[in-house]
Image 1 (cartoon, one colour):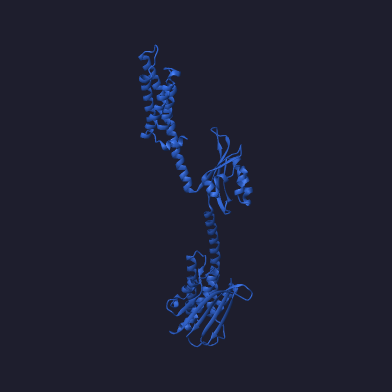
Image 2 (cartoon, rainbow, N blue to C red; image 1 turned 90 degrees about the horizontal axis):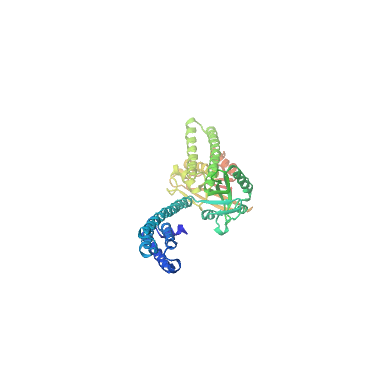
Length: 438
C-alpha cells in the first residue's frame, strides 16, 4: 500500500502539502465534534496520528507542516482551560513539538527507506528482465514454491499455473533429468548451493535448456534457514552453438583428413599419367585449384553445403564461366552436402578440362549444356542426376583407353557417393550422365 502511494504522492511536493492540509482539516473538524465528549484537554488523540501519516505519506516537509499546524491549533483554537497558565500551555506545546518532531524524523526516514527500496527493486527487475532471468523461492518447511513473472514467461505458463510445491516442479523437467535435479537439490540443501543445467519442458511442449543457480538462505547467525532461492536462465542458443561448434570441429578434422587423402591420390595418379615433370606440375596445380574452389564455397557456408550452381560457376571460371553464353545450365535450386560438393566439383573440373582441350570448349562455336534434376527411379528411390552434353565441337572418336579424368570421375561418383556414371563419346560430342541416391 505504502509503495503504491509514494509513486502517486511525491515527497515534499505541492500535492503532499495539499493532502496534509486536507487531513489536518478533517482532524480539526473531528476534534470539534469530539469536544463535548473528550473535553479540551485531550488534543493529541486526533492531531498526532495525522502528523505521523503526513510524515510517512508526504515526507519530512509535510510532517513538519503538520506539526506546526497542530501546535498552532493547540494554542489558539483549542486552548487548555482550568488552572493551566499560558506558560504551562506553551511548555506543554514545546514538549509536544519535540516529541512530534522526533516522530516526523523517524516516519520520514521510513518513507525514504521505502523509496530507496522501490528504486533498488525497480533496477533489479529491469536487470533480470533484460537478462531473461527468472527467480523462485522455496519454503522447504511448508513446501511452498513461488515463481516470479519472468520465470513464468521462461516456462510459458501463467502465474496461476506455476508450481506450488517442490515436487510439482518436476512436471516442467525432462524425465531424463529428474534424478539429476533431485540429487542436485539434496546436495544444495547440505552444501548451501549448487549450479546445474537441465532440460525444461515448456507449456507448449518445446524443450529448452536451462541454467539454474540455487542458494540456501541463512539467518543472521549464519545458520541454514528453511528457505532456498534460485534463478533460471534459458541457455538453449548457447548449448546449440556449442554443439554446432563441436560438430564443425569434428567435420573440419574429418574434411582435413579426406582432403589430404584426395590430394595424395591426385598427386599419385597425376604423376602416373604425366609424361614430364612440367606436365605433372601443370595438371596437378589445376586440380588443386579446382579442389580449392569448392572448398572456398564450403568455407563461406561454414561447411553446411553448397548449391550446384555455385560449384559449376567456380569450376568453369577458368574457361569463361557461365556468363559467356557457351555454357548453359538449368535445373531447380539444389544444395549438396560437403562431401557431394567436393565430388561433383572435381568431376566438373575434369569434364571442363577435357572440353577445353579436346571437346566443345576448344572451338569458338562449341557449347556445353548442363542440366540437373531430382527424380524417382524404378525402385521408388529418390535420385539426383546431372547431365553434361557437349555440342558444336570437333568430331569425337570413341575412346579406347580410359584416362585419369574418367577414372577420377568414377571414383568420386561411384565409390564416394554410391552413384553411377555413364559416358558416351558421340561424334557430335561427349554425353555424360552422373547420378547418385538421395
